[in-house]
Image 1 (cartoon, rainbow, N blue to C red):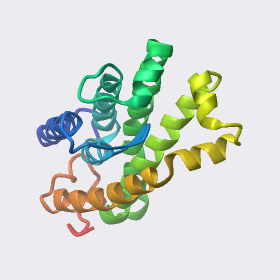
Image 2: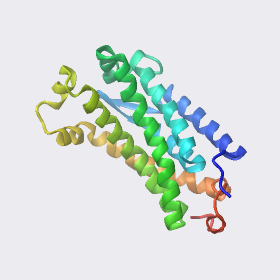
Image 3: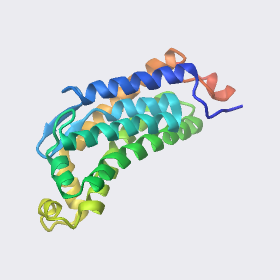
Length: 216
């Protein structure tokens, strides 16, 4: 019988991923700033938490990611050029734009991994897709919130430069998003396989899933 409560091992992984994310957020390990945007590797702990602890774990670590991202708007853990500008325009909307996309990302990743694992029975495939989705959805949600909440501001209109919204988003995120997706896919896959071999992904699963090979 399945339960929504996290096991001791899941809580341990959740705490570890939260600690790693905080370390990455407040050191150069988490971000590579290029222009107004940054390549972030913080989506990886979110993906691992979602894989090991389900939607609840993903949402918790995603929320922590969102809080640290908002902190950069006010100079906590680094400075985001875009974040400080958006904060000056509207602090509340800046918080929403930074926080909600990361929370939703972590929540959905838990369901994505759970659904793929049930459908394929493979940790390897499920983890790789979840890692890719972590970076992809983070970018989609982040940029969608930017356009939705600040699209009419002079700042964002200047960035758009009269281009089609889709063209603007693709051009704006560019190589940053590609690097995030590649790194998140590879590292999430490697870490998930290691956790599976340690039998840390077999909690609260049905007997069929529990009998799958540890190599995925």
